[in-house]
Length: 127
Image 1 (cartoon, helix red, strand yellow):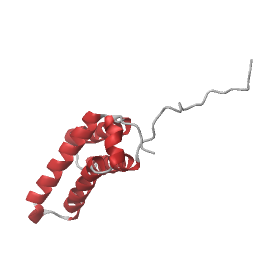
Image 2 (cartoon, helix red, strand yellow; image 1 turned 120 degrees about the vertical axis):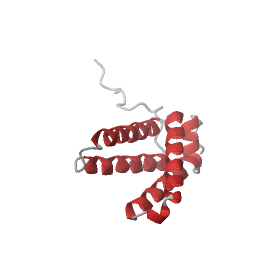
Image 3 (tube, rainbow, N blue to C red; image 1 turned 90 degrees about the vertical axis):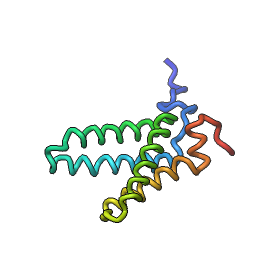
Image 4 (cartoon, rainbow, N blue to C red; image 1 turned 135 degrees about the vertical axis):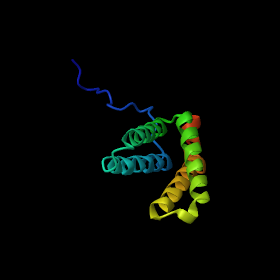
């Protein structure tokens, strides 16, 4: 038995999640936590809330793994959320405005930074 060489626990070829993608996933997780906490207060919409929470968790996991489909659906749903929020802005309260801002930030974090684009297109890192 030779103890001179140890296998690394995490492979060196494994890529790090870019900060913009991690931030977008974190926003989705916060977005999942808020409806989850409200779901227990409102009984009738529990099934709908649970489906929404599971969808947000799945999208956050997909972003973390670099799934192009998760990026596409997160972008589509966030854009629809922003559009709906802008159309109903006259009735928006603080949580509605927070939803518009959060969805806009998610779209920006997934589409604008070069590190995000490389993450989802499996391109090598610069540098």
